[in-house]
Image 1 (cartoon, rainbow, N blue to C red):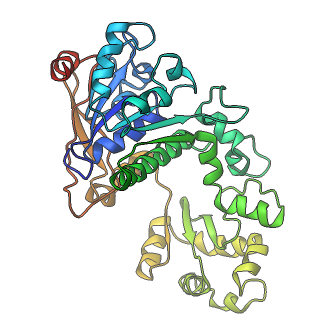
Image 2 (image 1 turned 45 degrees about the vertical axis):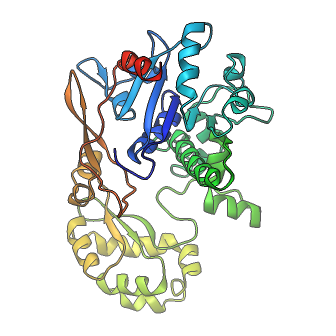
Image 3 (image 1 turned 90 degrees about the vertical axis):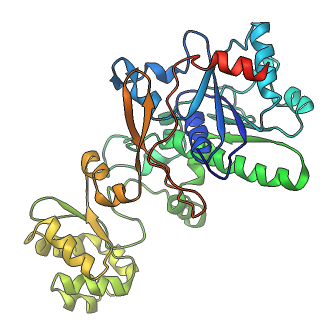
Length: 381
């Protein structure tokens, strides 16, 4: 891939989701990524479903455009030498082992930075490199729970609800990518590499926005509110004649437009609803009024009317509808990669669009375990 990170070499010591998501973004931005995998086993996610001709679609969706070599870094001296030669040419190392694992193998930050002072070394883990929990393992749902996210997800009095995607892993992957790019810029000024320590749990705290602001400023402990926003109204899903519509009228002007569309303009002067704060206090009554009107037409009919007046609204799509949305196609958000056995494979594209580089419809090939061993060993001696 051509991109702003072209000619940078990334050594990818990651597996499953946090690290592979980060290195996939780096690859999409032009970096060369060499994925180091455990012999015979490879990345754990190679065994995660769904499968296409016995190959993991989960793995393939996260590892396009990377090269693979299997190396035993724990106790195989020959493999360690190969790794050292690759590392000597690398700009970035990304790993998501439990803290201390690479130190035991002789490839921790302290040892590596002495040999390669310009190397950017990024570690993503469940709880980070410090603190009383640093040695504990963590998966996405563990940090969703401990980070408070599950406490504000779902409906009041419902069972604990996981966010429908692995946001604990993905946010950590994104923050790791941000840290790497900041370190690259810093290296241009200082000539030195850096160690980047990202905790999945920290990342969950970082994205709590309204909930954490509410607690830290008011000592209120928020709970789940379904689709409703805690401080903006109307801002939730409403029933229509045939399904639901999302309406996000985030200010008084939009609220007035919305009331005009619903032919209930008189309520803009109602003392229960004439400010956002009052609407939040009386949302149950407002929702009842809205849904009585919304029940007269279908979601599509209401969306068309609201789009004409630029009122933020939309349907609730399932995954098929979301992926096949013409807007998503126009934005090149479903791209193609190739695998030597299954052929064309489609996956989510890169949402970062840059004027200086073409956002191609086709990305690099998906590697089999150890597929590039001969090529890499020949290249790095």
